[in-house]
Length: 492
Image (cartoon, rainbow, N blue to C red; front, side, top):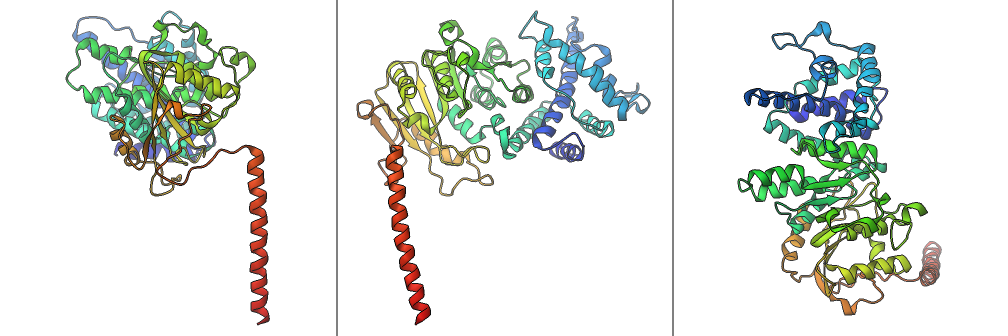
């Protein structure tokens, strides 16, 4: 059975279980089982390497809780040990009352916060087995047992299959959109940032860790066979950092990074906004920042006190955090809702004034409506800025797909390819233009394409109401005329 077919088979099995409802649940449940199989294969590989090198490897997982003991025990000839394989209520009871409490206990191992053991505790702290039927769980375990995580080709293929699962969660709508930023947008952003070996990269709202994984792949693919042993080690252990406050998103993100080859990612389950940005020093900063932070949310006054410019709008707080977290000469790309560009209220104006004065906002990418459908219809932009001095002029690019984006017709990389190509030299086209900072009035950074006549003015509410009333009058007059024509037609 091909890998994608195996995962599809598992999702079909889980959909029939009473404890599972929707893509979010079955992806979550597939994740913890995949993770434990991966961990087993990882430890077996480390043990084998130690044996060859005449050294010792101490396993993280004790005998009773190893995959080959509880999940899929084997006989001496390597076949499934049917006699000792748990199923039904025996299996669910073991998983719920023994396995999960054991794994959750790892969160108290504070000796090394970067250790795989501590991360296992973090992953399982807010995770529970939702699979109600032990017979369903047995079916799933047997399929996942056939996967080989020590095979690089199979691991590579599985990472893509897992991405599809995460994308499916996003397509489900609701709150699941927080996990997934469209791959086309992520790829375009990372290609403009051009991460290099030895640089650090950070995302304060990681979701499924798409930006960090794309950064990893970019460095690996563009410097293939050129990385020294030290650079390779740095790439795996000291390059990628992130925070995620939502338990399930955290689990998905860590799992996604592991499946893409980053064994012990520096991802922490915490709310980025709880950190007082006044305490951030140069040693705490990063070379590259790429993020699609949550927007439209409201933060409590206690959280707002961590920021010099206080606001309950999460997008403004995240923007301040990222500005403060960028190293000298560092580069950032942050997705923000349209309102950040045109709103000139006190907090919005003050944050943008600081951004323009202390950072070089060299590029603004205007994304089309519908990029984040179905879970958000908010129009968004990407702010690209460097910590290299004040802004003098901004290069704008308006992404204009020929067809309207929908849930079934999402954004593709082709839609953004011209942006990536032109961005290097700030090239001008029907979709791009340059605005000097002196021509920007009252920090209004709206992307108003001078090459089209479709600009939307952001009018005050009273003027908008006046326009609506005026339109109502015109519509009423037209309706009267239509009615009169119809009446004359009937009478004739």
